[in-house]
Length: 111
Image (cartoon, rainbow, N blue to C red; front, side, top):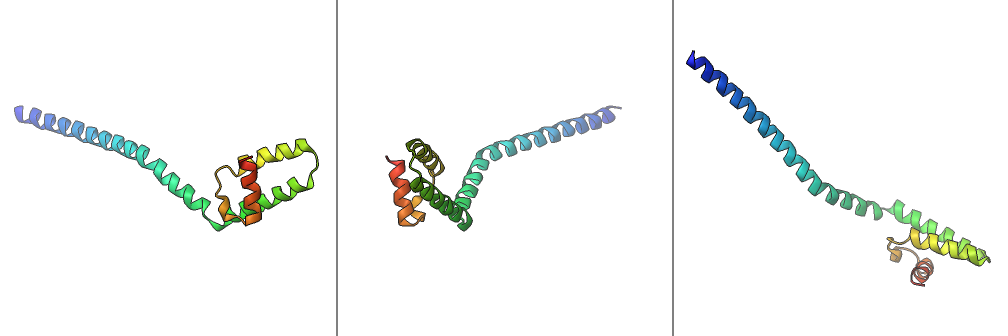
């Protein structure tokens, strides 16, 4: 009878230890995910921002804004376009653009 209780006790203790270990590993995974996930996303974002399609899209967008800005005569429209351009190219490396567009955007950013 004592042996049966010992076996049941060891089985229950083993089950509790196993569940606690599993819970602990799950918490470790959450903590490591919380630490590494932002770093992975930053790398993915950096890779995306250096792709040819992203840079080409920004180049086309800059050219469109350049033509729009130079074709308008209304000062309110120019001011609105300035704000849109500055917002759109705030975190973009303008050295990737052709010099005419780079100067245009840099001039508006630091006006």
